[in-house]
Image 1: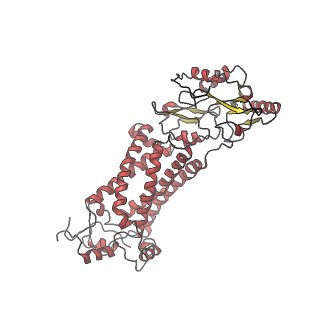
Image 2: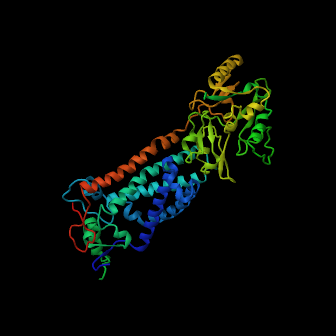
Image 3: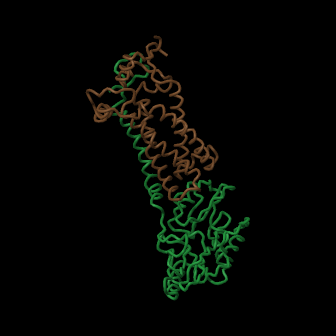
Length: 213
Length: 265
């Protein structure tokens, strides 16, 4: 850690983030193996589709726990839009897609991140509920169960593309971001560029944690 | 190979259950302890170890009396089968004969077929964690024999033969029977490989859907969302890459103590 770096996340946030992220990757890979016959080779490392089913189901439990903590922890910061600045930001696409002279300043989470959070929270809950019913389907009317399969596939359709966009924007698409989820410390330059309003607020309230100060 | 179907003429069925027993015998399905459910029907429904069951139904004969309605319930062997569409392991598959076969070894016990079958046929065995159902005696029909149930039927209610021939006979028989008699099976899910001759209207029979089809949410799941998901994931990855090489990453303005800074806006 270098002097002057800024604390962006605490250890608990990072643990939950990685619990959610890693379980999500395992669920995507194992789900792919069961959803598409052409991906059934993904079951070879665990010795067959039946074991892949178990991997998927039990990883789902970890996902549910991490998801619940994520929602409780982040919904206030990342789940509520602020008007009108968030609308302005979305109109400018945050400066990500075309050149914008003055991107509206964002706080701790930009509206893109909020959309991502809400999509994961909403469809994560859909995945959890439909997944549990798919695991134990026999006591429910078949019409419900059929709908759960559809919803589970719909959740996959929404979450998986988002996952890759998140991966890109959290790493090479936005250099300096990844350390927020590894060490928890980011550079001041990064914070100024990505979350200027948050940086100001933290400085003004005196809550900003700076390394070595 | 010409497509073959099983024709089940319920006007000739008198509920002897020879088919039920023959099925158990040929497929080596041991009996289970049973109980009196208040009906002659036994067991109450299809079970993992009971791929055929004669449904006993009592209806009014219109003169203040009661009459029996018998229906041999078993897999209908759809040409467009919901179970085959959803099966993730390929355990359920179309045979050369056009029937729906089941490879027990491949079944992973996910129970998806149980929920999607419009006829409620596949049954889950929790002990084995597998699903089972009638396979039209694949081991027999592959060797030019008729299914065990057909072989055992003493009244000629069950027949097995070339599809065109059987359907012709079915429509002839319906004409002879007259009244509400109808052929059931050739008009939906691409045509079933078990076809009924029903002496009564379809709606009279318990548990027999009038308009069976692959459920719409199953079609949306398997035919729409599956390809769309891959497209969306491909789009997200390709879009990210394009963004990186055209627009470029969003990099902090000053170098400061930035470690990984590269590229520009």
